[in-house]
Length: 159
Image (cartoon, rainbow, N blue to C red):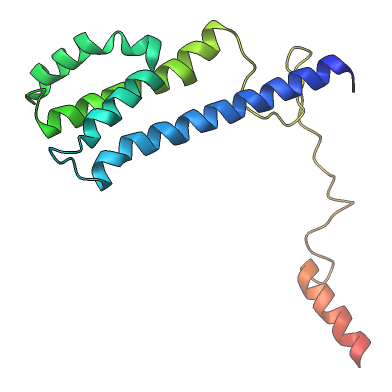
């Protein structure tokens, strides 16, 4: 393995760890207001919204107009608990779209799909030819299946 291959592998592992970490923190931030009540002394949903703005930073700049539009379209006043949670979900969706869809396409990262060895840029892969019936027959001349032949063969060995 060359050093450049090792560097690419390390970069891919680091990128996968960052993406997994971002997703874990974001989902935890998204679920925190559900399980921890927002009291006047502890504004959990406000902290979660601030955290989600930071986690989805460049795209969160576009969130303010979208939040206003979503509040009007869905009829939630933005200062209610429901409106704040809709804004939190909107920020999460913007972050997911940014980090898992826009950034990989803009910077041209490698695909996340694992291939099974077919040629990607070469000639078209063809499927193997089927095995002829002369080599593998489902039934013998007496009409027995392979399982019946194995059971009968083992029965004959015991006797």
